Length: 343
Image 1 (cartoon, rainbow, N blue to C red):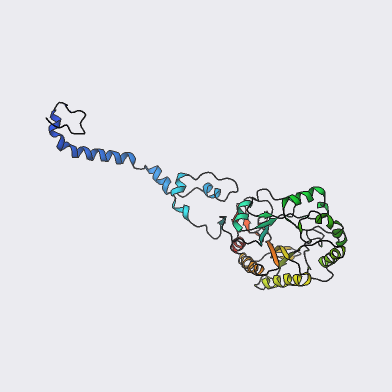
Image 2 (tube, rainbow, N blue to C red):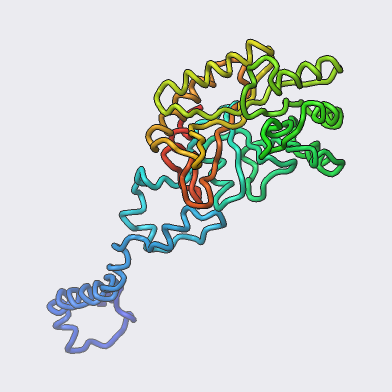
């Protein structure tokens, strides 16, 4: 009895004339089926063009946007531009900053704040206020401040106590344009700050922290006479010499303050700026970046410097890069890239 091939529908199918020609027709049929399958599965011209195209400008912008980003489109996944490194002129945040317990920044609210804080490698930040900044995230610890006399009230002090472990004292009381306080008024209010139980930093004078008889010297003498607690010295410093010698000038100032008071030091504002009657003058991007690198290394090496904070994380709203480390959208400036790598 004839054996029915497995490809046939039944064992007893009737023999037909086509059966005699089947061996000859089979190769031709295979060719036809293969061609049809390739035609159905190959990508059309529109799909091929989409796969080769780089992401749209809106997709690129979403990579540095502060909010949640949409899932990438299929074309972005296969785009040859997806693996490119950012160019030096536009360095989006990526959480790659070198981290140090000393390293911090001063901040105000801007687009991409949380991303920039994480990217720059800051361990802590402050904002001249008693509570944290919206959108800062949790990558860096917040340190509150009681800015001036009007901030010494139950609400601000309670908020500060709930927001951090350390407390920064009055901001530049020696400047009329800042907290503008006499030494006597600052000493009168100091027990209220001390009562928070937080580790307490001195008022941060704008200038002359190392000078005998200066504002800070008189405050610390008065605090000592009254038995008040000051746990560390808070300093500001801005350099008007844009040469490499600026790092030495900063070190000399910090060293002089340490030699005078022998208390741990927090440098809570510093950068290169030349103040003048016509406004602020800034160094070149390369000079500011070089200073960020070299000054940070110097501050890291000084055992009595507990913390330092660059001024400031964001660039000014008016568009001048100034001393800022990140533009809106968490894009690092030249100084930002330098500070990110330092610490």
